[in-house]
Image 1 (cartoon, protein in one colour):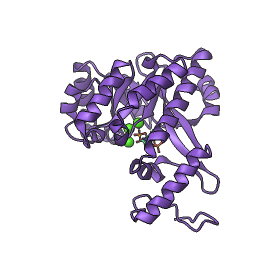
Image 2 (cartoon, protein in one colour):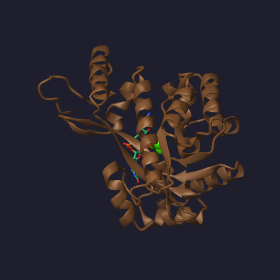
Image 3 (tube, protein in one colour):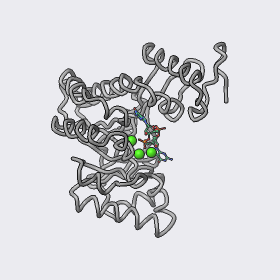
Image 4 (cartoon, rainbow, N blue to C red):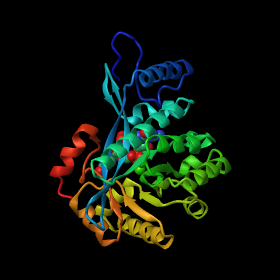
Length: 277
Ligand code: C2E
Ligand code: CA
Ligand code: CA
Ligand code: CA
């Protein structure tokens, strides 16, 4: 992997940053990145399959590193998730996503904004209050914010995590289960959690174009969700055939490269004007 010029450290695959000194060094660079405002958000549109219009965006974190360029979450989020640094970074993400949502609202667009939450965030008992304060400060109705949680986030301390999620739901924030189908105990969680929507993992969505099996998995998840009165988003929609299949199966929302890649914020308005939806 490439070396960061001048500093002599390797900013490599976090899976390899397994020694304590490497991890600590990486964390110190990440802490500096937060302080120096090097994080940015890209926004990926979500298409409503009922209205055929864009109904919201998912905020996805990027690190604009002065030397390495634009870094994707897989290169730095796993390291942050092992430390308390994930707390201020998640708050930074939510604050900026909420601000942007308000800006779009003032421009006449009524979009739901989604942000991703890590397992560790759900151990922070203050999270609902912190998010409530962000919404109040930006004068945004809580119903416009959706938090995406993976099933595995709940494993560390289910009782504490459930309590935090219940309180978030009470203030009106929408909750969504991300990468649905890849974890386990999904069905048990669905019963217990105040979940508003499911996101079918892109591996199933991408397989659905290929053959019967992926297709029936996607169809089953949609049926299950609708029986539980939960809406469904398919992620990883990469072609017209998949989009059409999802429409036929009654999926509510779709997200993926075929609709749009995640966009820098300055490109969103132009994209909305040009897009087919
Ligand atoms: P995710 O939440 O499942 O986000 C979807 C990922 O799939 C994004 O990658 C997105 O760019 C990518 N994607 C979207 N459409 C397509 C498609 O049609 N085909 C394919 N192959 N990929 C598609 P990204 O932005 O690299 O994010 C990766 C993961 O990093 C996210 O997966 C999420 O788990 C995590 N992440 C991103 N931003 C944040 C954040 O602010 N906080 C936390 N805790 N995690 C984040
Ligand atoms: Ca997500
Ligand atoms: Ca996902
Ligand atoms: Ca994923």
